[in-house]
Length: 293
Image 1 (tube, helix red, strand yellow):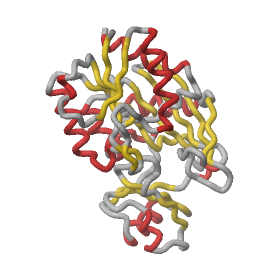
Image 2 (cartoon, helix red, strand yellow; image 1 turned 45 degrees about the horizontal axis):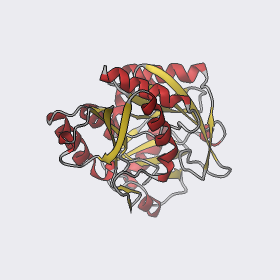
Image 3 (cartoon, helix red, strand yellow; image 1 turned 120 degrees about the vertical axis):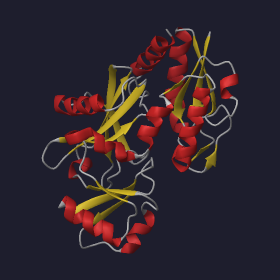
């Protein structure tokens, strides 16, 4: 049987994970992937991404999956994946793609498909005030340039915020985007590809009186085909992203002008929503099998 390392983190939101474990949220998806692998003669073994001797453990391939602790060690993460590659272990997505995707400045490369963004070395009173004017927005969202799970993300209303509100925001390099009202009703769309083949999509709608569309327990998830216009924008963004990705998830929100905007391209450790679209596990493992030849 072909052996594939299923890379995970040592912690999830500060809680330690035993070797071989993944966050509880990921368990259903992993079981579907493991089952699809068994049918194709591919065995997955969950290991830490930062094990120094990973390239010596006899794996035929490694895939980055639930390395959800990488955001606090982003540079170390990229360097570690590159070290595995230099040692002879192929890792997907590659360290080059991880380096591209770890900082959300990649949005600058996506042209009109991406949401308008103001970049700053720090989120302070001056940079936030400038962002309100540059975006001509009544409300903005302030995020860290390296981050996940909405950690360090705050929403501010023009003329109704203070520097104290920034205490829960990014503590380093920041990005500011207009708050798009459609997130409350239309929600956010996540479209997923394995290899060059589109797999499935999920619509994520915050619960009433909330606005974050990616928090379990605070968001409703639906497996739902995306509108053709959303697919077109996602494909335009994918064409400008690095080629030869084993997997990629593209998240979009409908703008106030009724045009779709890419808010994130997830090419490192995206949650794949396979429990909402179980057929996607076979598509994922088939893409791995093609890589293995």
